[in-house]
Length: 130
Image (cartoon, rainbow, N blue to C red; front, side, top):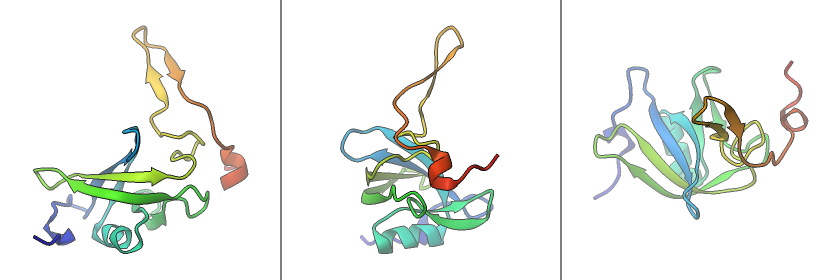
């Protein structure tokens, strides 16, 4: 059976959520969105490409920071409406400089704890946006 990216169920604006996970340790690194072309770019290049919902442009993960994701495996769920990409992450996945975008832990008392260490200063990589 061969894979057809057009066989997936994209939402009304042509996007599908893509969960990105570390292939070695299972850490969930990020959630982003792909359209069919971003998925095709990912399949062709072996590195992750996404569609920015806010900027309305394609983005190559690590294109600015150098923290690329090399795709090891791609799965889709039984409803064909969500992707799971297992990757080899170079450096940090998060634009805030953390390994995972999921570094804010909500404690039982309602407080928030930042977990993990910041691997790079985003102002130095992306410039100060304030």
